[in-house]
Image 1 (cartoon, one colour):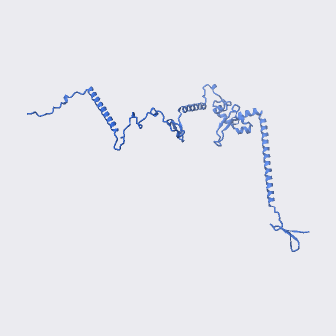
Image 2 (cartoon, rainbow, N blue to C red; image 1 turned 180 degrees about the vertical axis):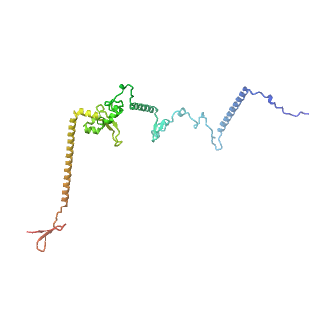
Image 3 (cartoon, helix red, strand yellow; image 1 turned 180 degrees about the horizontal axis):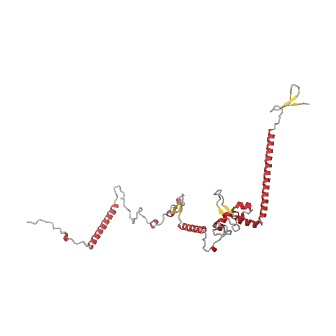
Length: 320
């Protein structure tokens, strides 16, 4: 009697080989080899099927490898090396800009950024501001009284720094406000009219220092040129010799200006009279009526008479 077939008993978990790092590494290698063989089989199957036309008698679509000699395959042109593409000459001239270096000026323009030039301009601007700030600072006051500048009139150390810097004049604020006849400021027009100075003399900083100030009448006008009164007077006395000579010259020029002004007025008046007289005479001349008489006719008394065509004026005419 035959023995019944029985399946061999499964090994218990205790009979499995223990998991070691070497076994894990071997399993991973076997898995990678199996994946590689499967990839090769799929590639060979795709190549063999690509050569067989489809039902439409067309070659099926597939990815063309880079090593293919097909005209539709990728070619190793100049762009493969990272060079720029050749531009079609039929498009005309153009300018090549690097947009990564362009800055929007918010005025409709793209300005190329130049960081070095901007840094230089900022540095120069900071230097000018620092120099301007240093010039506007007032000089220090020393503890030693002999080292401090003093007012020429009262000896005070409260010097007006604006007069000192512009006019090179040591005067305190109190003396400047009290002695107006000496330290007041004159405009360029006053210097020319009252002291008979010229433009070239007033523009020379060495002869007459001046201060520029915004015109109070209108901001678009030229700046005012202000001069210290005692400096202008000293220069005028030196130029003309004495105040008496300056007064005589001023009176002489004033009389000449008045004479020229009166002469010009008389000429204008004569021209006006001439135009008025000619206009009245012309109007009278145009208003005159010239009689145009008709032929001589004889009235009831047997006297020859001529009458004007326009106004009807009649005259008696004797015929011989």
